[in-house]
Amino acid sequence: MKKKYGFKCLLYIAALLTLGFSNILKAEVVVDDLLIRGGNIEDRTKYFKQDFRYGGTQEYPESADFMGRILKMRSSKLSLVFWCPGKSDAATGAWRGTIGMASPSRTNWDLNSFYNVIINGKTASGYPMTVDEAAGGEKGTLKISWHHPDALVTTEFNLLDGDDKLILTTTVLPKVKIPGYEVTLTAYPSSWAGGGEPGAAIRKREGLTAVRVLERTEKEDNRGSVTATLEKNEPWVLFYDKYFDVAENRGDGPCAALFSTKEASAASANVGNYACQLKISYPAEDKPVSSHMLIWDFKGMTNQAAIEYMKALEIQGD
Image (tube, rainbow, N blue to C red):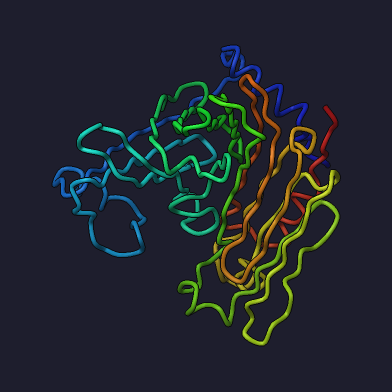
C-alpha cells in the first residue's frame, strides 16, 4: 500500500499548525531545552549525560565564549535530539550557532550542522541565532531564527505524535532584495567508519531518487563522487551505504528527505565517499516566503526496507 505523503498532505498539516488547529491532532510530544556553557560545572554534568560528544572527543568545551543548546523532541514513536554548538559574544550577547541532529542516529544527518540556509553566498549560521520557541504538547515545536544581514531566516521543526518523520518549514523574510535562497542538508549515511580518512577504503555510499540510483564515479582510492541535478519527478533522495547495511549487521541505517519540486527552482544531490548533500534553491519575493521538507532517519532499518518505504510514497500534486 502506498503512503500518501505528498505535499498536499504536508502543506495541509503545516497550515493546521500555523492556524493553531493542532487540537484536532491528538498527540503528546515532550520537548526539552538544555543550555550548555563552556567551562560551566553544572552544564558539564548535563552534557556528559548525553550519548554524543561534540567534536567526537571526551573533552568538555572549556572556552568561556562557547555556548550550545541541546533540544529534544520525544513522542510515542520517535525521539529526536538536536545539538546546537556555537559561540556567544560577551559584549553584545549575540549567539552564533548551527543545528545538528544527534539522534535517532549519531551518524546520518550531520551531528554539528545538518541544516543550513545560504543567501547571497553567505550561510545564515554565521550570524546571530535565537531559539524562539521550544514547546511540547499536542505537537513538538522548535522555532529557530538566524539574523542574516540580508534576510531573517526562521525555521520551524515539528514532530507529530505517532509520526516517523520531521516536518521542516523554512521562512525567509528579506531585508533587501535577494535573488533567492538555498537550503542544504548534509548527511553521513549509516556510519562515519572511523572518519574521513580512516574509513575511505570501505565506505560504499549511494543515493536513490524516485527514478534512479546515484552511483559514485569509480576511482582507485574509492573517493569517487557524483553530483546530479534533480528533475521535477525526483522529489526525494535516500542516502545509504552498501557496506554499512543493517542487513549485514553493520551501520545504523539510511536517511532521506522529501521536498516540493513545485516550491523549488532547482535541486541537486551529491554523493561522496564520506558526506552526502542535498541542495535546494528557492525563489524569493519582497515578502516572507516559505518552503517545506520532510526528513527521515531510518535508524535500525535495512537499506532494502528503506528503499521500499521511499518507493511506496505517493507524491500528490498541489
